[in-house]
Structure formats: structure tokens, C-alpha cells
Image 1 (cartoon, rainbow, N blue to C red):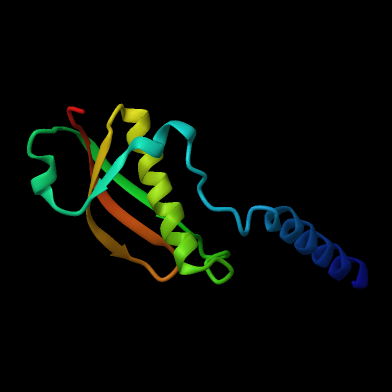
Image 2 (spheres, rainbow, N blue to C red):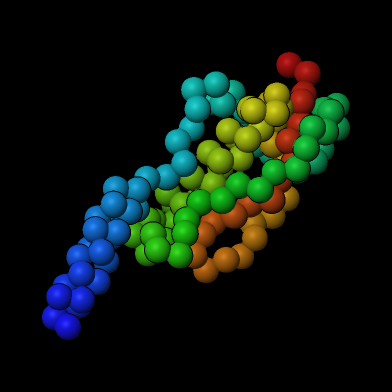
Length: 115
């Protein structure tokens, strides 16, 4: 009986240890995405071509308490920029923030704008 309890505790501690390495990491920004511009008004994008819709998110149910709101927001923006870069876009129009208690999530559109 005690052995079964110890086994459960060992499995729990092992799982917690393995996930703790990623608890505080946020979505990194790829080198090529630093040139992607963010806009909150559509007027800046009138001459641009729509590419696709994006959803950028950072935070999970188990780590949001340990990461600041600033870092969660930055990770979500980095996620948007990385997705846009993969699609060949160079501008992002952020529509709105989706409200979740455990993460920061943005809904946006990717655009390709003349430079």
C-alpha cells in the first residue's frame, strides 16, 4: 500500500520536474520576423494584400500564474509575427484580444504590403 503511494508521488514529481523547464519560456521571436509591422487601424493597410487570418496565443492553465502579463502579451505577439513570416506577410492587423483567464490571445489578419 505504501509502495503504491510512493510510486504515485514519484510519477507526479517526475512529471512536474520535466514540465518545469518550459514553465517560464515564452514564444521566441524568429530573426526574420523583426521587420513585421503591427497595426491596430485598417487605414494603414489599404494598399496591402490580405494573406490569411491569425490567432496568436501565449500561456497555459499550468504556467500563467508564473509569467507576467507583459511576457504573456509579448509571447502572443511573437506568435503572430512568426506565423505571418511563415505565410510571407510583412504586416499584421490586430483585431481584438480574446479573453481567457489563463492566456493572452489575439485575433489578427496577415497582410503583404508594398515596401
